Length: 417
Image (cartoon, rainbow, N blue to C red):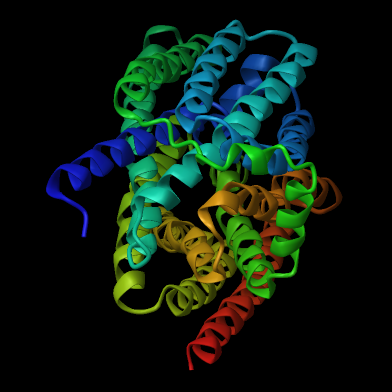
């Protein structure tokens, strides 16, 4: 049993980690609420913005595995401080609304600061702080807490965006700059908290062992032979695609359904508020029920809801908003618990970072191809047919994730018996 002081210290570290994760990513994914404003301000096409996000996904795919190695070898606290600092500096360049060539470099830089030095470090901290029976609630609270931070920041950002728009005669560029500044300030403010409250969280491995050049290969082969790791990976890649589809809601609502920029931003911010509710609830329910079985249920419901979205526009704004919020609730529930399945894979702490990096390298490949896939569909089809095909096809992928989660749950029951 942990002492009260140790529990309190772990809670503080967890909260700081959650806030750090909550402030570092929104700057990269401003398109979720301000896609059309970004296109207008940078004078670029959707295909060009999609290319930037695909490039970001490529950087992620390349860096996830070494990210896990870094998290096992070095101080997670120092890695997180480095990530926050560099992300804010690159964000400052982004706020200048530079050329498209510069935009490509910016996204590559963000890929390194959030994929290489941050991703596995923050996940490993959470996995180590959580007990064996609390993985669901910790990872659910991580994603839900991130969502709460992002929703608070997005609410503030949309409010300021609306104010600046009204004072500058609908100037997208000045309004977008104000939003970028908010996120940069938020990142800078969390850096001292990470420095003060986070422990080092290094692996404290035997130094002689770390010098063995064959250890990395041995550890990686052990992960590759773990069948449950592959099932966990399938669950995450399918669940992540369901979530990724929600990034297109801003463009879908504004360009296809014709809602105004402020209205669209308000709807997508409301969706963000579903994240703490969906993720945290799923985490706690998963610990008491069964994480993988709950994941299967949430994925099939999310798939059905996403597939229904293109057919709801005829029923009016209120119905569209309701479906968007339901999809948000379900997909955030999926995100909240899919990493909790890692505990079921029997991975030691000494290689947990490597396992996270390996799974992430495969599971987050949608970062590469989904932006291009969406842009391609909207090019070859009408907007109506393009979005319908996009949402329905991703729903089918979600169904495969449901099957993987069910198989993983069955595998755990078999091993337990």
